[in-house]
Image (tube, rainbow, N blue to C red; front, side):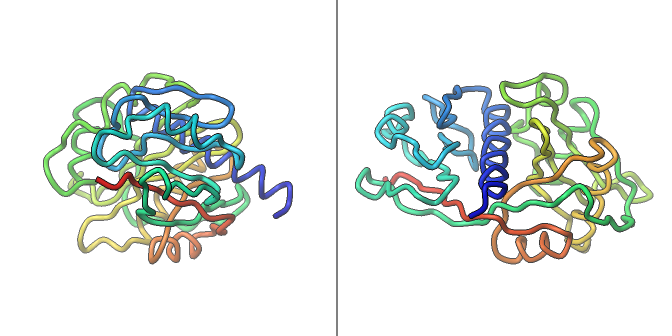
Length: 238
Protein backbone atom coordinates (compact mmCIF):
# COMPACT_ATOMS: atom_id res chain seq x y z
CA UNK A 1 0.00 0.00 0.00
CA UNK A 2 1.68 3.23 -1.13
CA UNK A 3 0.96 6.59 0.54
CA UNK A 4 -0.62 7.78 -2.71
CA UNK A 5 -2.98 4.79 -2.84
CA UNK A 6 -3.96 5.29 0.79
CA UNK A 7 -4.71 8.94 0.05
CA UNK A 8 -6.88 7.91 -2.91
CA UNK A 9 -8.76 5.39 -0.76
CA UNK A 10 -9.51 8.03 1.83
CA UNK A 11 -10.62 10.47 -0.87
CA UNK A 12 -12.90 7.84 -2.42
CA UNK A 13 -14.42 6.92 0.95
CA UNK A 14 -15.05 10.57 1.84
CA UNK A 15 -16.57 11.25 -1.57
CA UNK A 16 -18.94 8.30 -1.21
CA UNK A 17 -19.88 9.32 2.32
CA UNK A 18 -20.68 12.83 1.08
CA UNK A 19 -22.94 11.35 -1.61
CA UNK A 20 -24.73 9.18 0.97
CA UNK A 21 -25.20 12.19 3.25
CA UNK A 22 -26.67 14.22 0.41
CA UNK A 23 -29.14 11.53 -0.64
CA UNK A 24 -30.15 10.67 2.92
CA UNK A 25 -30.47 14.31 4.08
CA UNK A 26 -29.42 13.23 7.54
CA UNK A 27 -26.45 12.34 9.69
CA UNK A 28 -23.13 13.98 10.39
CA UNK A 29 -19.38 13.65 9.93
CA UNK A 30 -16.56 13.04 12.37
CA UNK A 31 -12.91 12.63 11.43
CA UNK A 32 -13.45 8.87 11.23
CA UNK A 33 -16.95 8.31 9.84
CA UNK A 34 -20.23 9.60 8.53
CA UNK A 35 -23.31 8.15 10.19
CA UNK A 36 -27.06 8.67 10.42
CA UNK A 37 -28.95 8.17 13.69
CA UNK A 38 -32.10 7.27 11.73
CA UNK A 39 -32.51 4.46 9.21
CA UNK A 40 -31.45 5.47 5.74
CA UNK A 41 -33.29 4.87 2.44
CA UNK A 42 -33.07 1.54 0.62
CA UNK A 43 -29.60 0.85 -0.87
CA UNK A 44 -27.89 3.41 1.40
CA UNK A 45 -25.75 2.60 4.47
CA UNK A 46 -26.33 3.98 7.92
CA UNK A 47 -22.61 4.67 8.30
CA UNK A 48 -19.50 4.96 6.14
CA UNK A 49 -16.03 4.72 7.67
CA UNK A 50 -13.43 7.28 6.61
CA UNK A 51 -10.31 5.83 8.25
CA UNK A 52 -8.85 2.44 9.09
CA UNK A 53 -8.91 3.12 12.83
CA UNK A 54 -12.63 3.85 13.22
CA UNK A 55 -13.87 3.19 16.76
CA UNK A 56 -16.36 0.34 16.25
CA UNK A 57 -18.27 0.93 19.48
CA UNK A 58 -18.68 4.64 18.81
CA UNK A 59 -19.67 3.96 15.20
CA UNK A 60 -22.43 1.51 16.13
CA UNK A 61 -23.64 3.72 18.96
CA UNK A 62 -24.39 6.41 16.37
CA UNK A 63 -26.77 4.34 14.24
CA UNK A 64 -30.10 2.62 14.86
CA UNK A 65 -29.14 -1.05 15.09
CA UNK A 66 -32.55 -1.88 16.47
CA UNK A 67 -34.26 -1.24 13.14
CA UNK A 68 -34.23 -3.98 10.48
CA UNK A 69 -31.53 -3.70 7.83
CA UNK A 70 -29.10 -1.31 9.50
CA UNK A 71 -25.83 -1.38 7.55
CA UNK A 72 -22.25 -0.12 7.67
CA UNK A 73 -19.92 0.52 4.74
CA UNK A 74 -16.51 -0.62 5.97
CA UNK A 75 -14.44 1.43 3.55
CA UNK A 76 -11.17 -0.38 4.24
CA UNK A 77 -12.49 -3.92 4.84
CA UNK A 78 -10.89 -4.02 8.28
CA UNK A 79 -13.81 -4.16 10.71
CA UNK A 80 -15.22 -7.27 12.35
CA UNK A 81 -18.86 -6.48 13.12
CA UNK A 82 -19.97 -10.10 13.50
CA UNK A 83 -19.84 -9.94 17.34
CA UNK A 84 -22.32 -7.03 17.13
CA UNK A 85 -24.79 -9.09 15.12
CA UNK A 86 -23.75 -8.03 11.61
CA UNK A 87 -22.90 -10.14 8.59
CA UNK A 88 -21.17 -9.24 5.32
CA UNK A 89 -23.73 -8.33 2.67
CA UNK A 90 -21.21 -7.89 -0.16
CA UNK A 91 -17.68 -6.90 -0.97
CA UNK A 92 -16.43 -4.59 -3.72
CA UNK A 93 -13.36 -2.70 -4.90
CA UNK A 94 -12.72 1.02 -4.80
CA UNK A 95 -11.76 2.21 -8.27
CA UNK A 96 -9.75 5.16 -9.55
CA UNK A 97 -9.42 6.65 -13.04
CA UNK A 98 -6.80 9.36 -13.63
CA UNK A 99 -7.83 12.54 -15.38
CA UNK A 100 -5.38 11.72 -18.17
CA UNK A 101 -7.18 8.51 -19.16
CA UNK A 102 -8.42 8.65 -22.78
CA UNK A 103 -12.15 8.84 -23.47
CA UNK A 104 -14.14 7.38 -26.35
CA UNK A 105 -16.98 9.07 -28.21
CA UNK A 106 -20.47 8.10 -26.95
CA UNK A 107 -23.24 7.01 -29.30
CA UNK A 108 -26.07 8.69 -27.38
CA UNK A 109 -26.64 12.41 -26.78
CA UNK A 110 -25.41 13.13 -23.25
CA UNK A 111 -26.42 16.06 -21.05
CA UNK A 112 -26.81 17.09 -17.42
CA UNK A 113 -30.23 16.71 -15.81
CA UNK A 114 -31.91 19.99 -14.87
CA UNK A 115 -35.16 20.40 -12.97
CA UNK A 116 -37.36 18.06 -10.91
CA UNK A 117 -39.28 16.66 -13.88
CA UNK A 118 -36.08 15.56 -15.63
CA UNK A 119 -34.75 14.09 -12.39
CA UNK A 120 -37.95 12.08 -11.97
CA UNK A 121 -37.58 10.76 -15.52
CA UNK A 122 -33.93 9.90 -14.79
CA UNK A 123 -34.86 7.96 -11.65
CA UNK A 124 -37.57 6.07 -13.53
CA UNK A 125 -35.04 5.08 -16.19
CA UNK A 126 -32.52 4.13 -13.49
CA UNK A 127 -34.93 2.01 -11.45
CA UNK A 128 -36.98 0.56 -14.27
CA UNK A 129 -40.21 1.58 -12.56
CA UNK A 130 -42.02 4.67 -11.34
CA UNK A 131 -39.87 7.16 -9.45
CA UNK A 132 -39.99 6.92 -5.66
CA UNK A 133 -38.33 10.26 -4.97
CA UNK A 134 -35.14 8.67 -3.63
CA UNK A 135 -33.14 11.23 -5.61
CA UNK A 136 -34.80 14.38 -4.33
CA UNK A 137 -34.73 17.74 -6.19
CA UNK A 138 -32.52 19.27 -3.52
CA UNK A 139 -29.64 17.27 -4.96
CA UNK A 140 -29.77 19.41 -8.11
CA UNK A 141 -28.98 22.73 -6.53
CA UNK A 142 -28.06 22.38 -2.86
CA UNK A 143 -24.50 22.01 -1.62
CA UNK A 144 -24.87 19.14 0.81
CA UNK A 145 -22.48 18.69 3.71
CA UNK A 146 -19.10 17.60 2.37
CA UNK A 147 -20.19 17.71 -1.27
CA UNK A 148 -19.25 20.60 -3.52
CA UNK A 149 -21.38 19.71 -6.51
CA UNK A 150 -23.70 16.96 -7.75
CA UNK A 151 -24.84 16.15 -11.27
CA UNK A 152 -27.13 13.54 -12.79
CA UNK A 153 -26.04 12.60 -16.30
CA UNK A 154 -28.32 11.18 -19.00
CA UNK A 155 -27.73 9.63 -22.39
CA UNK A 156 -30.71 10.05 -24.71
CA UNK A 157 -31.69 8.64 -28.08
CA UNK A 158 -32.91 10.78 -30.99
CA UNK A 159 -36.41 10.76 -29.51
CA UNK A 160 -35.24 12.11 -26.15
CA UNK A 161 -35.67 8.87 -24.18
CA UNK A 162 -33.14 8.32 -21.39
CA UNK A 163 -31.34 5.06 -22.19
CA UNK A 164 -28.29 5.38 -19.93
CA UNK A 165 -27.08 7.50 -17.06
CA UNK A 166 -25.00 8.00 -13.94
CA UNK A 167 -24.77 10.19 -10.85
CA UNK A 168 -21.57 12.10 -10.10
CA UNK A 169 -20.45 14.24 -7.17
CA UNK A 170 -17.32 16.33 -6.68
CA UNK A 171 -15.42 16.57 -3.41
CA UNK A 172 -12.01 18.19 -3.38
CA UNK A 173 -9.88 16.91 -6.25
CA UNK A 174 -11.97 13.86 -7.15
CA UNK A 175 -15.34 13.19 -8.76
CA UNK A 176 -17.31 10.16 -7.59
CA UNK A 177 -19.39 8.14 -10.04
CA UNK A 178 -22.24 5.86 -9.01
CA UNK A 179 -25.60 4.51 -10.14
CA UNK A 180 -24.31 3.83 -13.65
CA UNK A 181 -27.09 2.24 -15.68
CA UNK A 182 -28.22 1.41 -19.18
CA UNK A 183 -31.65 0.35 -20.46
CA UNK A 184 -32.25 -3.09 -21.93
CA UNK A 185 -30.70 -3.20 -25.37
CA UNK A 186 -28.20 -0.43 -24.59
CA UNK A 187 -24.60 -1.65 -24.09
CA UNK A 188 -23.17 -1.13 -20.60
CA UNK A 189 -20.10 0.41 -22.22
CA UNK A 190 -22.23 3.27 -23.55
CA UNK A 191 -23.20 4.31 -20.02
CA UNK A 192 -19.57 4.47 -18.91
CA UNK A 193 -18.34 6.09 -22.12
CA UNK A 194 -20.96 8.83 -22.08
CA UNK A 195 -20.83 9.50 -18.35
CA UNK A 196 -17.04 9.73 -18.25
CA UNK A 197 -16.89 11.98 -21.31
CA UNK A 198 -19.45 14.37 -19.86
CA UNK A 199 -17.83 14.28 -16.42
CA UNK A 200 -14.48 15.26 -17.97
CA UNK A 201 -16.15 18.25 -19.63
CA UNK A 202 -17.82 19.34 -16.37
CA UNK A 203 -14.69 18.96 -14.22
CA UNK A 204 -11.62 18.86 -16.46
CA UNK A 205 -8.44 17.68 -14.83
CA UNK A 206 -10.07 15.76 -11.96
CA UNK A 207 -9.71 12.05 -11.28
CA UNK A 208 -12.82 9.86 -11.01
CA UNK A 209 -13.43 7.41 -8.15
CA UNK A 210 -16.15 4.97 -7.15
CA UNK A 211 -16.61 1.31 -6.32
CA UNK A 212 -17.78 -1.73 -8.27
CA UNK A 213 -17.76 -5.52 -8.18
CA UNK A 214 -18.21 -8.46 -10.55
CA UNK A 215 -19.02 -7.69 -14.17
CA UNK A 216 -19.44 -3.98 -13.39
CA UNK A 217 -15.88 -3.89 -12.09
CA UNK A 218 -14.65 -5.53 -15.29
CA UNK A 219 -16.51 -2.90 -17.33
CA UNK A 220 -15.01 -0.06 -15.29
CA UNK A 221 -11.51 -1.45 -15.79
CA UNK A 222 -12.10 -1.48 -19.55
CA UNK A 223 -12.81 2.23 -19.27
CA UNK A 224 -9.54 3.16 -17.63
CA UNK A 225 -10.20 2.47 -13.93
CA UNK A 226 -7.87 0.60 -11.60
CA UNK A 227 -8.96 -1.28 -8.48
CA UNK A 228 -7.19 0.33 -5.51
CA UNK A 229 -8.56 -1.48 -2.47
CA UNK A 230 -11.41 -3.53 -1.00
CA UNK A 231 -14.49 -2.47 0.94
CA UNK A 232 -17.25 -4.43 2.64
CA UNK A 233 -20.84 -3.65 3.48
CA UNK A 234 -22.13 -5.17 6.70
CA UNK A 235 -25.83 -5.57 7.45
CA UNK A 236 -27.38 -6.18 10.87
CA UNK A 237 -28.92 -9.64 11.15
CA UNK A 238 -32.64 -9.43 11.90
